[in-house]
Length: 458
Image 1 (cartoon, rainbow, N blue to C red):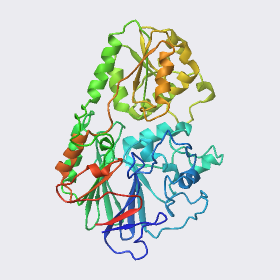
Image 2: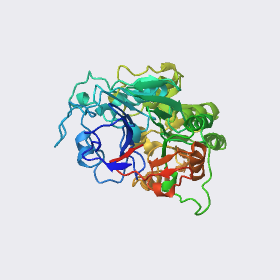
Image 3: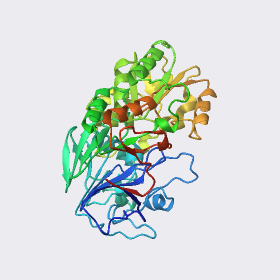
Image 4: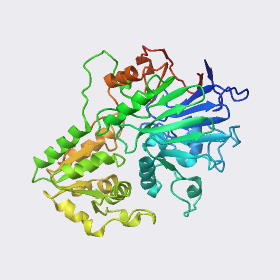
């Protein structure tokens, strides 16, 4: 049933038969970096195109050469951009007549490499994910920039073409049909996929949860996936908790997070209150704008992302370094009537709830009001595993600013992850996006523990 791929090419490539094969290139025994291939005959589709993020690594990759050299991704002939030279590798067609890549959502561990995808391979995502990625990439500092821009071609687009699909939309790639369905996650536009080949049905969750504003979408996806031949599901929470050991972690909801922040701001009417958030979590900031009893003000770039994605106007400010970092021509134009001067925000102690983005913090953190309040809600650094996490919070304490973390998980709890399995009842379970896949069980069929390069024939 299973074999090992070598040099990034599935072992079955030479003597292809018409059977469904799944290759797990990356995203196994680690959180993030999913790179999964489903193949039937002369057709193949890949799911997600990011790389795992390790802030404690001694070297951070800067380009495709680094990614391959550091072993973060295998070199995939015919998949990566043919114009990018990679040491020790040569681009060549991989023998498939039909190919495509699908993105589950706009987090870097799922999208970081999209601009390294070859021009002849179409890229699909939900319409909302497409909008988020195009807005986030306007400074070339979210996903890796296209190779043409790395070479100095300023006229090249910041994001390679993406075809946006409506929720429930389906695409046929040769003999494989892929249906995109919305799910609940802390990235706007998150989707799961139902993959139908001529002989099998596979469900891929992407990143998924139940405690956001779209839990009904998660349940609808699971209903569509019921009795799938294979369920490829993320297992982030099982990386940190073993089933049946200790007390279950509470399921804090997005609504509770927004309520807690709104109440905190309301209870501190005469203090300066700043915050930072992860800008792809559009739903959270949209609810905070509506619920917090002050005028919410976003930094220029995040305001542009929010407006580009939602079409909604928002108050904004120009940070200290923004004059040297203008928004590109294709970026959304912000309403000048809603601009708030940064100095007015720094002097404020009651009117504004404003974003202390990374650039502004680096330039003006020492100008914050002593006795003020800072709320860290889903922004980087994400947790104690990041070496910068403790120093980050200490930097506020040193200035007499009360820094608090109020957020919730982007992933299903351990108990909910088993609910996913119990709902779908897959014939084969393949856990990915987690450090301990062995903590799963499948009472309805087989379970495999994917390793890098594993090829599974269904």
